[in-house]
Length: 235
Image (cartoon, rainbow, N blue to C red; front, side):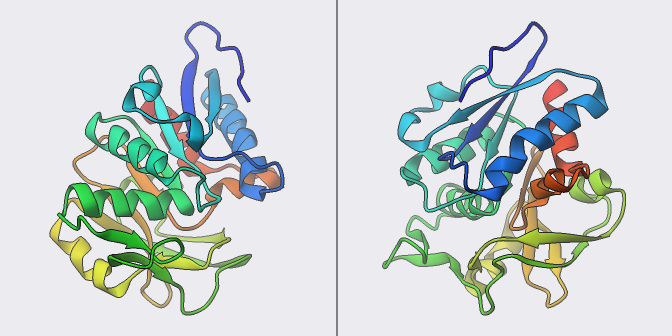
């Protein structure tokens, strides 16, 4: 799915395997269009299927990158390429649900030295960065506490939000402890203290959430982090 960009149009790469039955995929174009209207800008987006992404060069020319939900991806290496490209090139990045999970694995492998970093949904061996949740978060909504003065807290304009999920996997206990050692900081927790959002403090805009805030657009509500992504993409 591609749209013909206009002059002075922001170009957003949506990396993931588009499925019209996935609610988050239905919501993402609405959230981008709404955010662009609020900011009075033009934003175009390209869905890039993971089987079509084999090199960082495939991402050159985009103003922002969104690693979207609905994993396991058909080509998981594409997710890692996307997260790494955005991280290393200061490209505004948003990861939600599966995008959050794979951004963490990429960071574990290439920054923290967890070369065997793994995802319990698809991997049998290695150190699990992403593990099964004790309680499923499929179609669950709950409260998230945000760290003050972070990109995510500034986007929402408050330090407590309510958002929804569609997932069965989250950050493992072992990797949660490891995150304190790097620049990818935890910026959101649920009421049990489990990690629900992170951001890279050395990056202009690198935010990932386990919750699917984009689905607000399906109810006609704004998605603050999508607005923040587009603002960052403006430079």
